[in-house]
Image (tube, rainbow, N blue to C red; front, side):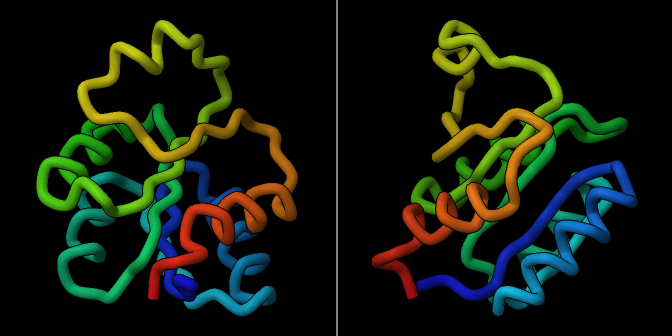
Amino acid sequence: MVRSILIVDDDENLLETMGEYFEAVGFNCFTANNGEYALRLLSTNNIGLAIIDVRMPGMSGLKVLKAIKSVKFDFPVILMTGFELSKRDISNLPFPADAYVTKPFSFDYLNRLIEALTRNKK
């Protein structure tokens, strides 16, 4: 199972809280408060999964998703948003994420989702 994850969100408080939680449950956590920095972290570290906020200033989470999936389609990405995503919204994405969560969410739920998505990955 993957033990290194990247969390991307422009909300510094959420980023810190999520990082602390996932470190406490045994993940090596990388955090980025913008899309450009997230892509730099992905290119220079052995990260197995990304959790990315959809709406961020500058490079949106959808653009980060597209950049990741255009290079490595099988890289697991979870999109998180404070807004409901309809099935139509999801089906119109050029590169689908592996999962979607709506804020607020349970960290335990997110942890189980990560485990399910990465069960067979090293």
